[in-house]
Each structure stands twice: as C-alpha cells, then as structure tokens.
Image (tube, rainbow, N blue to C red):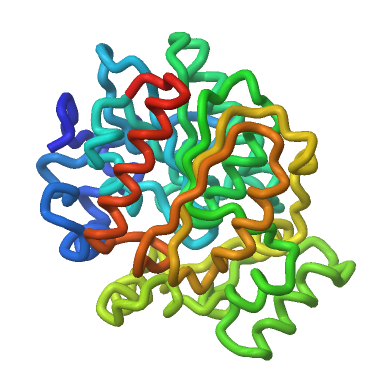
Length: 328
C-alpha cells in the first residue's frame, strides 16, 4: 500500500471530469506485476487536477510530508500516469513523494489546445517542476518509462538545476531510423512515420488511432498484457494528437549529449524492448559527459513487469541513488 495515500476525486464539480475510480482499465495491468507492486481502488494514488496554462491536467499523487525527495514519473506516447503506479512501489522508491501526470492529450488530461506539440509536453513538465519547487525545495528525481525517458532528458537539459537525478528505461533518439522501425507495425507504417516526420505538412490538430502509428502489440512479449493494452481506450485502443506524434519523431535533443550539464543518469534498459531498441539508448547514453550508469533488465519488454527485471531495476536504483547521495 502507498503510505499516506488515499483515492480521491479530482477537484471541480462532482461528476464533471472522470477519474480512475470510474475509468478502471488500469486494474487489468495489476495481475502482471508482482503482488507487492499492485494497486487496488482502495490503495491507489490520490487524484488531483492541476491547471497548466488553463488546461486541467490529471495528476496521480502520493504526498509524504516526511519524504526527503520527490519522484516525478513520466509516461511516453500512448501511455498515462496510472500505468506507472507499480514502479513507485519498488522498495528503492516507495519512500519518496510521488507524482505522475497524465500529460496533455493522454489519459484523463485534455490536449488543451488545437495544435499540441511535443514541445508543449516538455514545457508542461518544466512548469510542474517549478510548481513543486515553489512548494518546497526537496530534490526531484525524474523517472522516465519508455519514451518518457527522452522527455525526462529534454527537461533536465533545459532546467538542469531543478533535477537531482534521471532514472530512465529508454533514451533512444526518436529521429533515428532504427527507433522508427521499432515503433511501427509494418513497413507501410514505417514509411508513414518517416513521411510524418519529414514532410512539410499543414497543421494537423486532429487525433488518429494509436494503432495506425505504433505496433501496439510490441508493448510486451506477454500476449495477455499486450491484449489488455490493445483494449485500453486510454492506451492502445485510444487516439493521439497527430501533431504531437509527428513532432515527437522530429524532436532533437535540447542539447547534444556531449554538452549536457544535467544530473547523473541511470539507464535501465530492457533486453526485449521492441519499441526502443536497447542499443539505441546505450548509444545516446555513451555520449554523455556527466556521471552515468547502465544496467540491463533481463527478459523485460518495453514496460518491465517481470519479477527478475524489476528486482534488478530496484537494486540498480538503490545503488545509483546511494552513490550520488540522492535521498530516498
């Protein structure tokens, strides 16, 4: 159970916006994680609405006033914050205050604008960091799952003084052909991704089914987990803003790896990640000139859920945070 956590409705008029007590597909993922990492509707994170530039964004929150640090968990394209709740229960992380936003246009957060781009996501996380920093000065660790790792890097590159450490399961540059091939369902979809990334298309505010853009079955080698994701209206069965996806494929690093002056980086890459090949993440990591550590998660897919992989992740995170004296 999350100490100090209780389920609560988002702020605003009752029934005005949905919450994860109403949208419960996330519960289907729990059986695939070790028992100690599972959540129920009775012990899940609290739910808040945070106004970002006039848009009410959904936040999963576990407030711990006595925690020495905060963990800000970031999902990638096609994900949402509640999917990441099991990772916050890892022994190395469970003592930290926890926040996991549904980023604009994903989960229970509206896009908030007619032309949502990847830069808006970066700005959103930077503003959330600023809001947390205004509340108190506790250090913040960014935890980026999958392509959320690329987002975490972009944020830390722009505001290196606001981030104490980066813990990432992916750090693959989405502009590379290997990454685009891994994301897509078939050669035709691969060509579509290339065209979306390169063509000078007009503004594309509309949403398209995620399955048109990604091979959603590649989220896991476990067929039942992949099927659960494929049926999730907030995940694989949902839609995404086309311009957000297109701008993500084109997003260069905020600074080159050799010029990155941010915090220490731990890359915990999955051996069987078909969306973001481990070699691509390792290649980018190798260019960093800040302290960096790398560990492989045995047998894990894009979202690590295997007990051996999670045990290795927990061990690596603990050693990493201890080495660089980040409280947890």
